[in-house]
Length: 303
Image 1: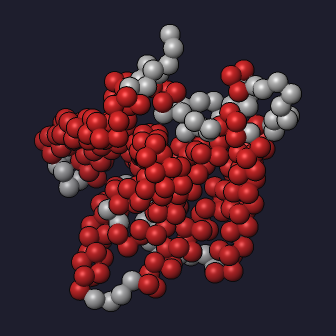
Image 2: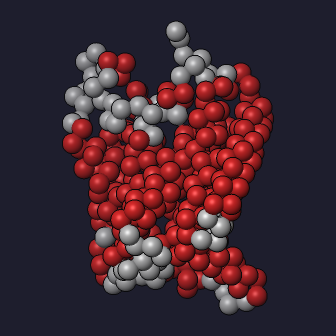
């Protein structure tokens, strides 16, 4: 059966409204079930209760809506979300007669690893910058209080350092957000924005939505940077698996860091400025490498 994408006929407004209503219905359904279960079984303020509620909200807000939307709107949800093999250089559909020899998979994975390593240092630098540029007034104090609530919730989830809690937090704080947020922001939103404002505007717009959704206004700059980087890795590789992998590694590193510190959430930088600057080198080299691959083979990467 040939591939069909109803969003091409629906237009921007109908596609956006369909995604919006699916998201609201999904959040009410899964979030409501999670809230009821967590409150009656464990108590919503307990670590287990908060963990179940966080899981249900992530499921209802980010993971299920793009899956339902792509199932309704297309004949092949995996193709719509660009869940294609990474890297897909050897795919017959991407083969071209007399084409330049395609790079090995090792090159793509090495470039992604360099980007991932460098991103840790870049995010750390931007987080420090964020602290210096925040004015000391009542408005920004309100933002600090709002972000403190989010941080306190995370600290509650990280209190228990048992192996079972680590496994549960790996699912709730690493895997579900990585898959759900990438399905939603890079899989659906970036594609929809791309059709109206172009790929660069789409990457920036979806990254801004990604940063706002985290409800951490004083971490907006590093979150925006991470969203842009994830958007471009999808664009350069032509596969949603690239940002999913990077997102999972970034969240996993933060989780393991907290457990190595006895369950304490690391909110302040422990990296010297010189090392942070040096850490930008693999990021820049990895970006240049991935971008060069994209440019050489744009014929089959273009959507």
